[in-house]
Image (tube, rainbow, N blue to C red; front, side, top):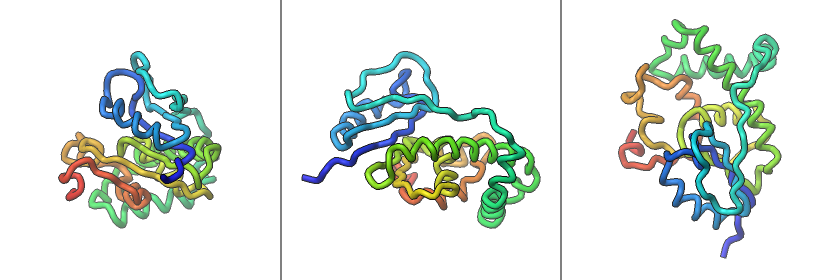
Length: 199
């Protein structure tokens, strides 16, 4: 019998709150048996909290906190430039990054700010004995891709893909900003369907 991993750091949209993400209600029971501790960071807290196993701890997130954009930009200039150049070189939507530079820069700066908070948060769990798990390829996965870029630590990250979180045909604006870079950073991607695998 293999030893349990110490920690699972689990990122959801709202679970264990509200009525969505019903599949996690079953999955969390299996996960609780494989890890000593599970730390859940829901993106949103909406509705009542559902019942969870005793070794599951729900935490608040500090996303979207205020920051000094000027200082952060100069602190991360090389990394910001790298992400933009990667998208312009590799994305089929490269011209949108040039035409809508200001909006994309603002989005990237917000996410880098979130990534610095999350990197500090993750270090308390240890890298060797922990697994980082994003249930969706959404805001959490985007921020985790930047954590991989800015951090001196190397985390084990697993990301699920469902449909609306990767299929550009389902996206109103027709693309996901910085997705080429994010795909480069996330090596453990797990689609839940054959369509997702082919995509």
